[in-house]
Image 1 (cartoon, rainbow, N blue to C red):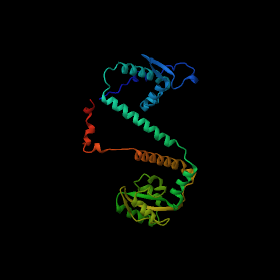
Image 2 (image 1 turned 90 degrees about the horizontal axis):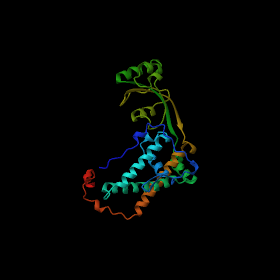
Image 3 (image 1 turned 45 degrees about the horizontal axis):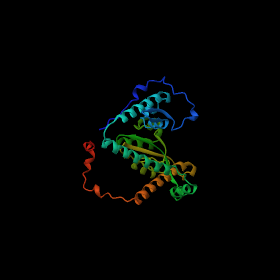
Image 4 (image 1 turned 135 degrees about the horizontal axis):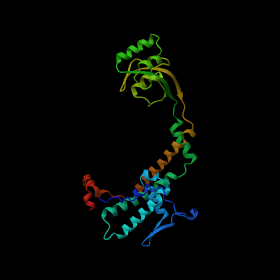
Length: 282
């Protein structure tokens, strides 16, 4: 298989390399920075090369990367020019795949970049939150122990007048124990089902029977309950805009694919394991 050529390593410690002095306002993507046997290497080539580097290289200062990237492109160009014979199938196929992916990505980027109209935004908000009933939120405390017997003993102690928070500090094995067992406010889906069901059945101020979950046995006290209305549009606008743009992308993909003349019959009967046969590309 083709091996990746890496030439940047000698330059990552060369922090003293200086960016060439030039009139920066005149530098454009097509500004030529080097030629190799008449083939131009431009600022645009260098920008793309930097953008495709591993993240740890991209974080290096430009003055460290400039000479390294330029030398890499020069070396790659010289090597490519010296290649003789037909381009191996693996290279040709990789170039086709890369071009296909990049051009398709441009279509998706255009769809994602379209402005979201106020009409679409309001419609999405109405669909998501317009008919939603206020949801219940709970503020509860709990004491977590290993056995049901321990939980029953704690209930007896609390019903006998012991302070729930103090018992939690003393006996709860959960991370909320030092804070008196308080879990703060939570809504539907934020707790495991058994715990959530038990909390929903409690009256404010009441203590539950032992509740078993995957974490152990809980004794729960419901401190407060409230109804939470739908969030204002401004609070969820970014989320809704992302959903609208994603829906536009999915529609674009579906419509474009549906309009294309596609015949996949030639793939029938081919063993999927063929994808691991790298030797076919030699």
